[in-house]
Image (tube, rainbow, N blue to C red):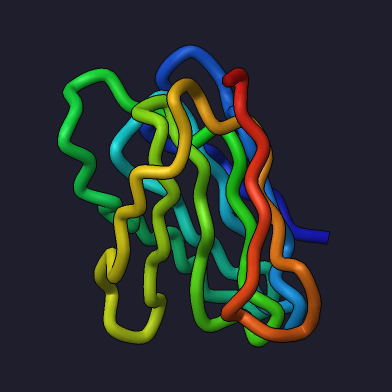
Length: 121
């Protein structure tokens, strides 16, 4: 059993995901960051990943690890989809995808190249 104390919480934790490789947990809040935490081992890893949004008030309402646990997909309050490469420690894509908040994201299958999103529009 491991306890993770959340950091940089703006109002509440909005979304979480557990990595397919069973090594990590991510969570989002009203913040530019998704927090990456290890779930195994004694040492604590708690790393803020900057998604670099263009808007000041920002939230990733839905986040998910890619099937290979290498990337994070996020749907946001600025109507965009975000992809973050964990190994490179950088946002790799910002895709203007909807006319309103994106509330749900998921990868379509075992490939990290096809994903779906759901929005208020």
